[in-house]
Length: 156
Image (spheres, rainbow, N blue to C red):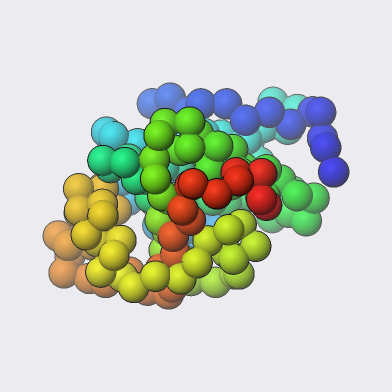
């Protein structure tokens, strides 16, 4: 489903409250949102924020940092559109892979495959989210995923 009234735009410092609210409402960690070495986007419908997503960048790889659609806008394919825009951006940036932590969902539908936590921690040691986990001596919960970017981006 294509919704011509929806646009995805690059988030700037003025969007921190919007990104934080969308992430918080989805139960996602908001620490380090819009930190240096990251790129975030806001999805809007009719000028109103309905989603947000971010990437934390490393050397040749990125960490997907939150992918959230507000509850009232779910179910219409907007989440898929948001995730694929980040995948396209990372591939255009020259990344060889995108990694992520997830507490639910089948990310295989987006071309991700499960990988050990140590792989992500080793590939992106300076990503803000990973630094935050290390500072608190915590491990991310859930499943660790990777999407190689040498495959066809349009797969999802």
